[in-house]
Image 1 (tube, rainbow over the protein chains, first blue to last red):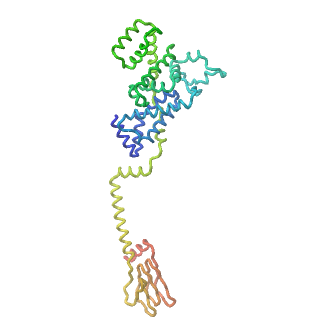
Image 2: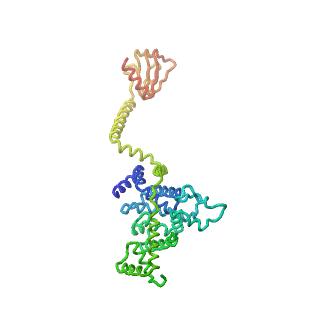
Image 3: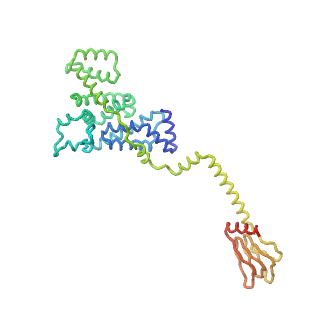
Length: 187
Length: 198
């Protein structure tokens, strides 16, 4: 597969957009998944994933063909998501549909302008609690947790994607796990 | 758990990352079997991971690729032509051939075009690419001048045709037939073709 990707990239470098279409086809689910697990919002995830591919296309000449293409591509995606998370804090989307609640969104939980009561959050579906727990993670922990547990990438590859020393990645995985444990232990 | 060795939690994480030394693993195992708090902590971590991983895999929405492709800057025109040429070598060769041959053909026509020529007739005089019908002479045939002018001071009993040139008529000059001035290449071609059938 890598060989095929490398060949497509050479074609893209020669100006062949159709070859890029095949690259999108190959990686769209992975990239979308990373964006979704980072942002937990379908629209934002789609925007971020789309931007990722556009950026990859425009900067394809900066990609070093000796390295893994997915690492380069995922780096663009995580960096974009981290930027978006930093920009949009604080984090509640009234429009965001709550997973597993079929059309319910945060509006329906905010009856007469009340603050979201603690018990109500706990009574939501498990998925929603996980969503919250991940959203509460600072982005530096969130990105390693998503890459490790959603994409199931090896620690070394995560270090390559985030351009961090392996030790830092390990520490962040540990801290991220501990932080998640605090939110999820009562489930 | 506060009384437990500090490294135990660290070992748990190393174990979860699958990067633990054998000695540490043994130590962790022994400790967890005896310490309820640490066992609980470890199980919570395991549960947390299971929860995070339980988030079902999701695929990109339908039409995603099309939207990405539409967002790309448009193919440069040059690229399009280049690719077409690469994909159709036969047409490319044929077009190149026609182009070169055509060029040769037209340049041949042009060469002929620039030569000064006129109907041979001993009565006609020539001055600086101008054919002169002297006063008092009568030419008893058609006169054709190519790439030159004609000045008619006498009389021509026939048609006068000037190709790529000018016709001057003196007050005393006369032409009994038609007078034609042809400047453009295609009119010239038409004229040549017409004269073939005469």
